[in-house]
Length: 112
Length: 231
Image (tube, rainbow over all chains, first blue to last red; front, side):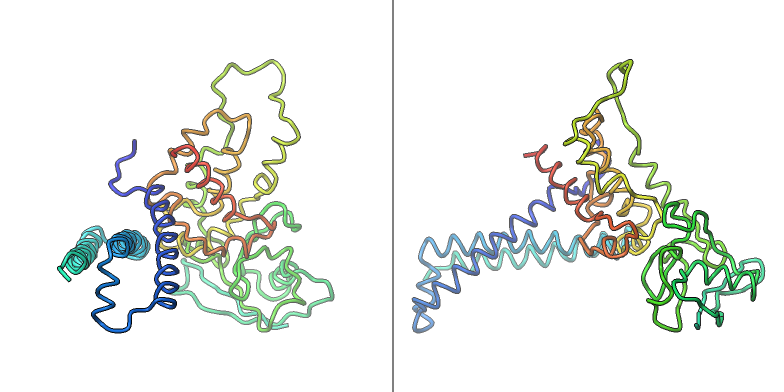
């Protein structure tokens, strides 16, 4: 057991799995909006609030957050060598991603 | 033919500079022969490593017009003029084209590049089937010239933490070996964010390998084995 908080294999695997989720979801959205696109804003909200669409959007956003965290983490590990600076940049990224995630959750859970 | 060669002698020079040479080249001449001609006829202070002169020993790795390669197997006729020659990038220069390979060798040592067998050694050889032997093709041929690792951006940024393509190719060579009994330990050793997973499949290593090997594929195979063991 090595002394490391950050891992190698698991994030790499998660990055790949989330990439597939993101790709499949985008395909689903494009196809469903192309063939049964809502006419106005209210209809669009209705579409998003359908339980299945809401759930899939949540899954999509969760995948984006994980995917973005691992990608940004990789960039920082490559280019930021100073440990304190690295910690700071990590914190900023986590705060931004968590805020975005919670915001998205609020939108998804807000009443129609 | 015009050459622009990186020069630096830490005993004399405050900083590196580029020196130009003009060499009469013959048809079929390799770059190493041109460098030796400069050393013989124009400037005996020009320093570089070379030994076998036929792409087997891996001593004369250098950066030729921006791309790493072995001078002894690079025909001058294929090079754009002026030919810019630099030491292998990303590692310390000792003098002119001679670089300090210590970090590179350290990473090589770290992957334990030898068979680990825990069972008592048999009286005879450890036999392999032809199929088992075939798995080592494309892995065992590496001559450790360091062309790949020193062309890899991930190795430039984290040479002390990322093993680099050459060492990882060797790791794969022993992970794939049917006679080795330390596969699990080898795979566990490469876990963590740096040692293997700094590879972003940039594939410069594949591009420059003078032996035509594919470290990126070897790294991919290690990842596959890790996944197979974990899931």
